[in-house]
Length: 261
Image (tube, rainbow, N blue to C red; front, side):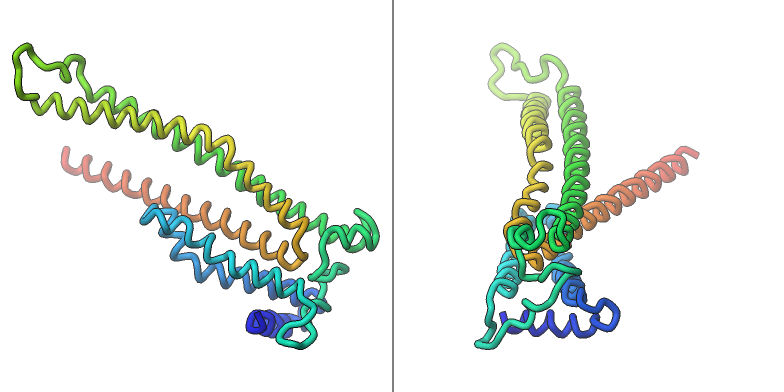
């Protein structure tokens, strides 16, 4: 933990000429960005669905960082010496203070209370953005699943799966029809699961508000930064995926036109 406090303190000193007493708060944001940059390859792999474990690794690797952040702004001593980070502030609020302590210092709209309200407001905006994108993604997935299900059903002509009387060996058409039927069934199940998850998962984004209300202000800043990064990163990866899809379709259409000439 002493390594972390030293790193944040040094970043704060570099930013102090510009940001004065809020330099350490900015250093926490910068440190979080550096962590997320290091984890970006894993996040990209998780978005592409490279491996099942890839989706969990970015979250799991951030837990120790969040724990160190929490301890660094909760402990009065680090390495046997006084914790210098506790004296730093974000505007009027000490980075080691909690919302309950801010309420005791001036109430909900006191100097410290307003800092926490600003933090909660920013987290709520990010959570709402995440929820909207989550619902849209679930809707797109549901439509894609329905389209795949309809295509699989259309690929199964009536009676193809029926065997003739006395037949002892299934025809290749029967096998392909059975496979298409199974694909349609699985797709329908996936569609139902996505529909249910699409209504629940976006709401989990607002759980960050509860966490930010009970942890030190510094840890709340970390949560805000990493959550905003996650939403923006996923939006950017989705944009690149859609752009690549449009480019691929345009190239395919151009090739079809040239072949017809």
